[in-house]
Image 1 (cartoon, rainbow, N blue to C red):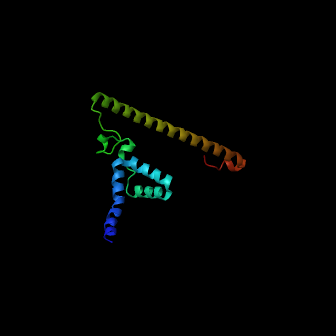
Image 2 (tube, rainbow, N blue to C red):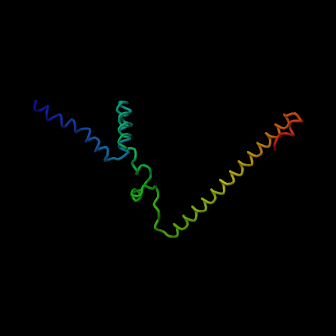
Image 3 (cartoon, helix red, strand yellow):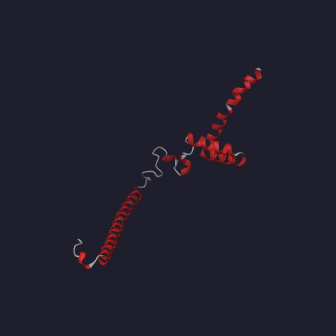
Length: 141
């Protein structure tokens, strides 16, 4: 009976040990365990998906291309590269691209407006042809 009592705490600490061991491998370890769980016993894989979702284990920044240097700011790219000439070039290029995007969006708006006007004029012309000649004079234009 005494052996059973000492065996229970060791058995209960097994999930914690497994969690700590997988955390040592990061997100890749958890995903590998999940895939193996699906291969060998699908409810285990499904349980790992639920556990990873509930404990936010999907959010490993290393996996999404975020460098160690950028983890503090949580941005995928650092603010400066350390090279002033490159930073000036980058800022100028981004400004130029933003201006081009704004110009293109304005062009698309004008294009949509012209198409809408053309469709409305065609509708009004078609409507004027369908209405009897005496009633067409009463229509506002």
